[in-house]
Length: 313
Image (cartoon, rainbow, N blue to C red; front, side, top):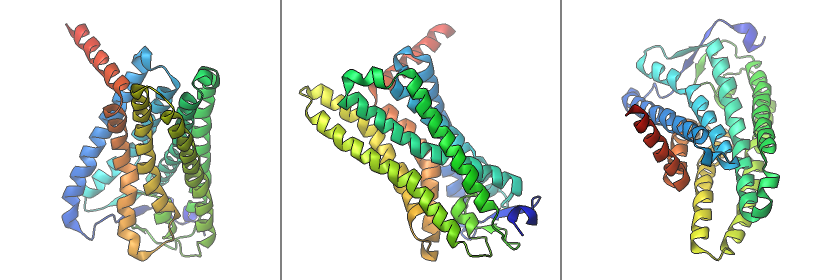
């Protein structure tokens, strides 16, 4: 009997840290503030990148995609988490869990690939600047972005289906804040070795391979930057790439820890905190990292604010 056949109209109980009620208020505040900052920061990047013609470049096209991903990524989980923290019944419907699992997995997989494409863009811009406009033309950027989205959603269809087909024998308590593959697999009452192997293999494809290619790209980028004679040119190149590299370390580091380490009861609570980091904290930090270290974005934001102020006058 599959999960879908057992209780399509049922509910799941999201335990989170319900065994530590004193943590609920601090967590509620952290989630709420992080979510507000995520919405404001990513919406700002999307608006600035779309409205300022100086930012109509491949780099900001991909950055806009990343901001859109982060907006939807956090919205798929945080509102439900806030509701559950305030409620004594920490439940999510079967349909809500399916939607949450599918969207979170699809957008997370898409982001894994998109960050790799962004490093490729920086590699071409710095290592082959004379060919940049020929290689990274508008059509190719659209094709690369579309490939990321299609691959991410295709992976989600497969993984969500495999996970939800596992029989759970009436188990409803998800030891997590939201519906995620590792937590749902623990509900199964049959051997999940094959599913865990599939999850590991796909995680290698979407995590280890992209991060390896990113590190190789940055090895070439560092070599190219060190050959730049102008100190200002080196500083600008390192500033642009440094922002992307910080995002890469934050996102891939926590995701690899969650999906590629062997299951262990001792690391249960640590896994919850790590998943919160790549699911909530990293999307909040992305706009801050890209704007605080990027003069072009800050300049475009000032021009947008000035334009709005003049229109109001």
